[in-house]
Length: 329
Image (cartoon, rainbow, N blue to C red; front, top):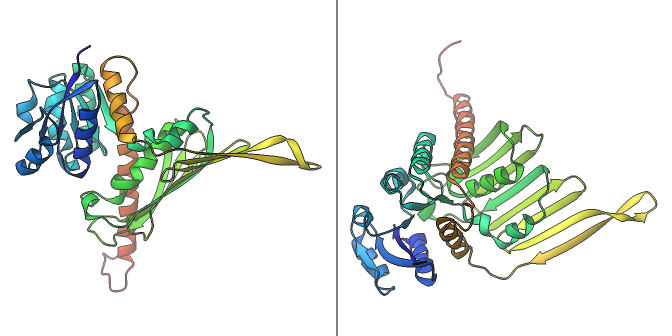
């Protein structure tokens, strides 16, 4: 089978890495890169023999089979739509779109055209999470913390869409049940949008998830704790570490069961390369799409609902500030 002809649109910080992975993989041929900053496109294209720098995504339509899209979130819909309409396979960075309606339209087009449509939720390919999924459990309670220092590069969207959506996607994937209620609070600290948010998500099957994301932290942390019947699991996405705790058949003391534990540490891996390899395998029909457009839409729906709950709370708090002059009851 001949290599899949690929391109990358948006070769800033993350898009450049996409281009590198395609250039490294035998199953792909990196044909071209596109960027609004043409000098940047030329700079990145020069790293890869045979790769062209192009000014417009429209120049790609007749020369590629698949594309990675890593432009700002506000441009995701308009950029991805023409490619899906032409049956070109799309790997779209998260969050997939700005609105739920846009996500619905892209999914409908992908279904009609038969395009492979994958969303770039990178933590799905973290080795600690991949190891955890080898022995799945039914969570009853989940707690996650995703903390990072402030970086203007990600501030085009709020912290829910920037950071928390990683954990939301993983939680939805693990729980596999409908959300029944969401409560959330947060604040704007260093940007015009939300920079720190905590959310409580309740599911129809009884599971509850408590999720925190902050981009105004002095440290970086990406941890999740999963509690299930007679077991407890901790995932450290940053350190690539998995710990499992289970009730043992042995007794520590009469009537008190022993808790057996095991820990797994994983070598540094290239999650983006694994993600792109999975995209190419899906295109070749060798495996299913690991993070579908429907997965991306579901994560987006939850993230938008969390954002709305936070703004509801902020609006209510504003009304009770000293000096507020609201309408009389």
